Length: 234
Ligand SMILES: Nc1ncnc2c1ncn2[C@@H]1O[C@H](COP(=O)(O)OP(=O)(O)OP(=O)(O)O)[C@@H](O)[C@H]1O
Image 1: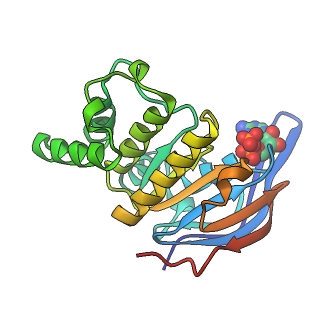
Image 2 (image 1 turned 45 degrees about the horizontal axis):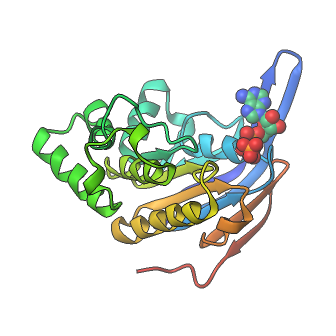
């Protein structure tokens, strides 16, 4: 079953007289429960594509379906509700709130987006803290933990709403190689444990090999797609 279906997706940015065609017609499908990477040089369109899949922006042409919803049918309000229930986000600069503890950062989407009751919130946050190995750091604040630990917290926060899809734009850009490798493998473990589909972008050839499906973007076009092994998992 495909969670994301893109057909001839184009994105044109206009500012004044200038036009940039960031995506020039890309087609692909992302299977539910898969671990996928978009790789390509700077300016190839990775962020643009992840923003479209994340319903943060709309395609100029073509069709894009995410979790059964044609993203063109979403407006500002329904788009926000859709993202809140179906999609988790991980960012390269972690985006943790400095005034909140590790526990509160993970809990935040449940309060702000899903308005979950307290007992259920506690249950979910504790389970995610455990899953990402951060239980003993729960009361610390972001400035008291390492970059790798911050990204672990961000992975937990992305998963706490139980989304079908987690999107990570260059999640390892601010991490050294060993830590980058650990974070990517944590994401893979989370896919195994929760069945969540993970899609990340990178231009780091050292970690891209960890993905099971690799889409190569170049100048707004999909040049090649590789599937490693049989793509199946338990
Ligand atoms: N908001 C925007 N307005 C105008 N042009 C844009 C905008 N966002 C991106 N672009 C252009 O679209 C193209 C693709 O950019 P995009 O950020 O998607 O690439 P990328 O592969 O993510 O690059 P990087 O690895 O450097 O983040 C580039 O030419 C970029 O300058």
